[in-house]
Amino acid sequence: MIDKRLFKFPGITPRVILIAILMVIQAIMIIIQARALAIAVVNLWELKALSTIVVPTTVFAVSFLARHFITVIQNRVFYPFVEQTSGKMREQLMAKLFRLGPSVVEKNGTGNMVTMALEGIDKVQTYLMLIIIKIMDMGITPWLILIYIAFMQWKEALFLLVIYPVIILFMIILGLAAQSKADTQYEGYQRLSNNFVDTLRGLGTLKQLGLSKRYAGNVYQVSEDYRKQTMSVLRIAMTSTFALDFFTTLSVAVVAVFLGFDLMDGKILLLPALTILTLAPDYFLPVRNFASDYHATLNGKNALQAVLDVLELPEMTDREQISELDWQPDSQLQLNNVSMTYDGADAATLKHISFGVKGYQKIGIIGASGSGKSTLINLIGGFLSPDQSDAIQLNGQTLPHLSQTGWQHNSIYIPQSPYLFHASLRENISFYQPDASQADILNACDKAGLTDWLATLPDGLATMIGEGSRGVSGGQAQRIALARAFLDEKRHVLLFDEPTAHLDIETEAALKEDILPLLDNRLVFFATHRLHWINQMDYVLVMDHGELVEQGTPEQLAAHNGPYTKLRAEMGGLHALS
Image (cartoon, rainbow, N blue to C red):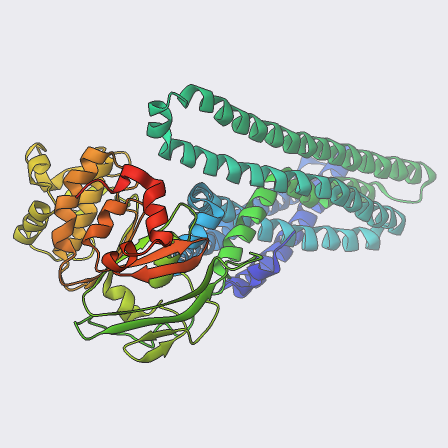
């Protein structure tokens, strides 16, 4: 039930020890409370003066309040730690995802990652808050009560000792069934999240194709599957709770029957009998409390395991071999027989890639969908690591990968759908240069073709965009990404991953006029399946099924009937734009 990695969290051990001490004190308060209540009731039963119950009633009240006050102290002691730990875990998860790059997000699904970082961490917080306190309660309170009962009446203590593991065993059986259902439910939740995000992203395309209503059925089916999985888990949870309540109540009743026979036979006095009967429900209370929160801890455990699995993913080492870099006309990058295999894949995605670049060149990367263009861009950007540790050379230095601080600080990555933060237009444009002046930002906007659109905004650069704010079109989003690049002139390496793939031909033609000036005096890697861009490239890499099947200048490739000319013929009019 407890993930062992939980105890690796900084600062958890002293807090667990403190919780254990508080649990011991609380258990003692429970015993004192039961004893004082029994004394008061016995004195009343024996018709003694009311003054004889003042002291035991006062002791009962004090111990009762102390018992519940300790619960408050436990929560007050543990909650700040849980809140701080879950907050740090969210920060570590986001930082880890940034270091791992987009490939991990693509592999696990955007919806899954978003859910994990938001609701998943909230479930982890609930899990941490419940599991430690509940487990410590189960591990301390019943046994102190049992020891106390054993000193008064060993037979009842023996019965309670025997029945307790039977109830635990029954809980384990139902718990395993609930665990299996909860795992399935969590997988369904991840699938629902990914499906929902993918649907939102493709909603415009679906509406254009007239498929939005048809696809709504798919969304409904995934949601319905998740509902059924949730209800299945709840059925088991409710069954286990009912069964536990039944067995514990029955056990207390059996104890009461034994005590009744012993009272009639004169084997036990009323005071210890009443004390035992008062303590019996508290003996089972920790396990009942744990069972009532079992479903919440299952969800939290699944979320914790998912988060920790991501945090434990191996990262690229030696990131500081090149801590500073300024790409210049004499700088060189060489890839020698590079292959790259995704984790868990049977075959390499990139196979034996070899090419070299020098200075300010515009390198086009072309190929059909699935040919490996984006993977190559991600490898060049340092988001992926090659299988070999000595296949990349940067300015003559052999590197295991390009996830180097200097290389990435000198690069700008422009994907198909640039991410717009929930912030002002100014903050989005100055993403790489937060201290940029107003004049520089406006100049970058002008170069990116945003001036006319900016003039229509009442709040200008202060306009809020991104999630929940003003929406922007695909072309406007790409222009904002271009403005980021124009603003930061110190970054001399540009990585384009099919930046116009989702744009119509008119928008692309207008955007192309603004992109071309950005390519001057920079090293550019431009992955695209729109062949009209190749006319502006100095060198072309032709990809097919992860292999570099042809390379050279556009003129050289067009001079003979190779993969480039065949690809150009297959794609027909896509190269018509000049």
